[in-house]
Image (cartoon, rainbow, N blue to C red; front, side, top):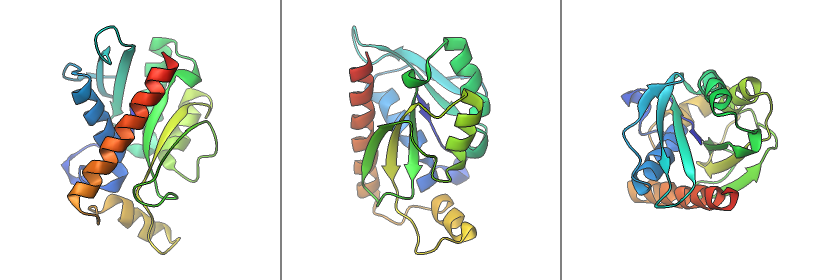
Length: 177
């Protein structure tokens, strides 16, 4: 499982880092050990619960648009088929609060997904697409400011979004076991 985000405290509370937040929520739910620095990221391994499926949870520390440099070597080490990978990421083309799960599909201009496709050798991985909404503009600078700026929604709404996205990720992991 790969949670997408950007490293560093300046990005921690931004829509672009919702993948990291969901990964952290899952690590807490599953009582995974503290992450180790591996594959240019933070990696935690364990089980989803007693007798549950084994999981490896990776948060690349390469910045979003280079996430594949972390996920590619991890995939190689684990010898995983693409459809055994689940990516948690922000999706500006979904309204805030909407969550969709899919296998493969287009990249919608998402630089993190582009990097993953390039380094993983394809785009046929599972995704939990977490709707963060978008500004009323297609200007790349305005869009970047939106996803890299602080959340505009109440903290309780953001927490509920993270929790629901973690529920969806658990469902995908449970069905793949």
